[in-house]
Image 1 (cartoon, one colour):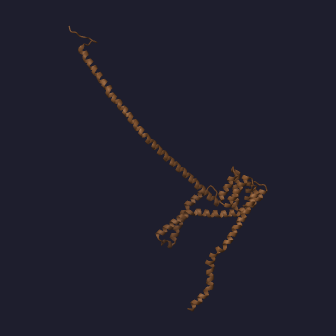
Image 2 (cartoon, one colour):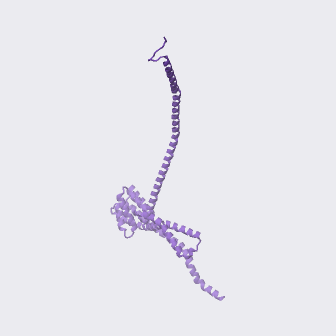
Image 3 (cartoon, one colour):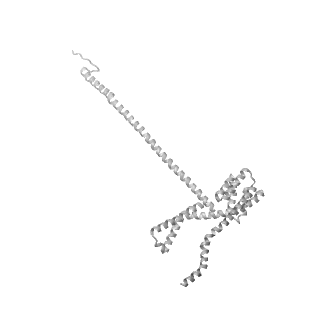
Length: 322
């Protein structure tokens, strides 16, 4: 009778191979989880650390790029702001130049810019026409023709400014010449009890026939006094529009009068007297310079004729004697 153990209906001959297989499977699984899976976890941890290092390394670069981009945007915005400010300043200067010449409409700036573009075109076309109708110009050196062309273009660019400057100086002289009469009328109006804005309006109406320029400026100043919150702002606008030293003195005196309560009639009377005296002094100064000014015309125009009359017969007789 053989000794045999029966487990689940299996004997030793069957249990031993199955048990050996389970032991081998357990050893394999142990090695897998102990070595291979550990290496896999270590690899994943290493990959995570490497990714973290790359991200941390890229963050300064990204921040640097963001700083560079932000700095570039700031430079562009500052450049745009400076260009806008410069354009506003140029527009204000153009408006001031036009106002001094008597052009205050909204279309004046656009017409001025258009004239700055059209001026060189007109002078260039005129230069070419003159070149083709004048044979003498066609024989000139090409380099000299290029110089003349550049001069023609520059003349066209500066022509609007030249015209506006001429008109502005003429208008300033008219305003300065009419100022003493305007101040005398202001003395009468203020002594009659009129306020400053009403005085300007009445004097503007009275001087419409004698000095249109002064009448326009006083009328506009009267309107601005009624609209603007500060009277001094309207007076300062008058100074900027006219750009006349005498008007600036009047405005400064009026601002001090308003600040310290000095009577307007007294201030206007003093100003009128001072401007009349200064105009008389300028006339006397011109009269004193007249002899020295006439010296050159006398030498250049009168003396040659006098020498020809006095010495001509003697020279003719001397030539005939030989």
